[in-house]
Image (tube, rainbow, N blue to C red; front, top):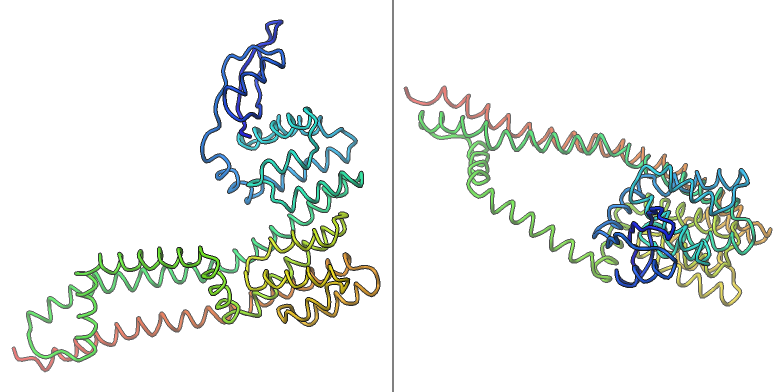
Length: 397
């Protein structure tokens, strides 16, 4: 079903605008006529809306929607009235269209969760399943509060990772740009002087000048090679086997950070779902989707099988050997005390804090290594040039 924007008039002459779901434009016109409207203009959906909106959603649109809807429902407003208000105050035209589509579906008899599930690029399966659990239990406002907490914590974690990686990224870019400028613009000027004076240059200077000349002459081959390598790499990790091998390599390279990150994501998602009333097996299935590392995500299948057999999740998680021992111990205590959801949230909080410390430690180690590497390259260039300059004294005049 596609979403069409329309402009129509009623039998009384009033002009109305909105959105309607239909298989095609003709079906949208028929639905409007059957509803008592006279269609004036029906516009097909623009390509790429879902993609652009999903990018905006990742920056806070879904969080804003959840926060505002939770406040309105908490104030005692009915769902349809709350959605109507959100559609009116939404700053994003695309989000306004989506909210109007959801409101339209609800007024036609669909549940809120079903209406959300029709927009999977904006509202993931996790979101709609939590809403469905809240509807079934009559605690939609409570579930929205938990969703709001979940989205805020996820956003805070992403922002922390982004902020600590700003300086290393700037250091790589500026250092790499400086080296390229030296090799392509500065060194060629010295090579002209050395060529005019004649004589034998030190080996390090010859190597440096040869590399500089090769880079200036065959830069297009280097650029094409980098582009081809990137395309090959992207195609490789786009396959299931390639992504699994790449994730396995990352797990060996940065195992501690990745395990803490995925443990925090998995436990917070699973704990939020269980607190919202989602059944354990369904919650495990949804929690698997938030794990980016395929190696760790595949281990959740073993956990689901163990849960079906009545083994709980602590013992099956231990057999995967993917999750930290402290997390496993806390989950086991949660199962034994009947407070698994609460303990999962505590595990998530614990490992989010531990992850922040681990990332800071990693960046603190990465920065001097990068500075040392850049310094060695710059030092080699400077020493090679100084040796060549000093050798000028020995050249005949």
